[in-house]
Image (tube, rainbow, N blue to C red):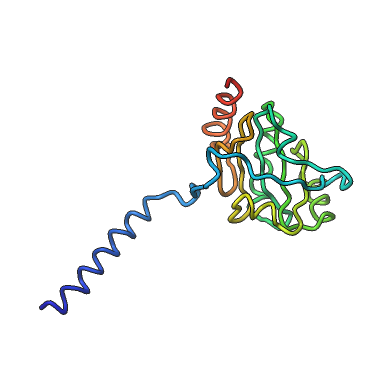
Length: 175
């Protein structure tokens, strides 16, 4: 009797953990950077490789960092949302082109529109690693002090923009 009871107990415990896991939103991956300074980087600007950009350049401003790539199918799905975001809202949107060739990235932005104030080139993906990027697209919101306030994994939707990102930006702008 005891031999059959232990596997049954172990199975029930696994079922409980699986049930708990299924209630979690897979797009809400925890980020160790929430509430901490944005990871530093200095990268060449995609359209002017002789100029660089760093998160320090945005101190005093609320801003969004969107990690994207021309080879990313989900990035194409969210791109029209980003273009709409820029047309309808005054936000500082910075692009981090992740593990992509400069020519491919430029061609992609030329074809689909360029919503970014500045887009930087992270060909090796090292800045993305420092930011804890799991995959593209990922979107971060920083406050005026350069503190990460939000990480959104996966493509942003209009609902994400209107219900989460814009309200957060408006709140941060008042601080």
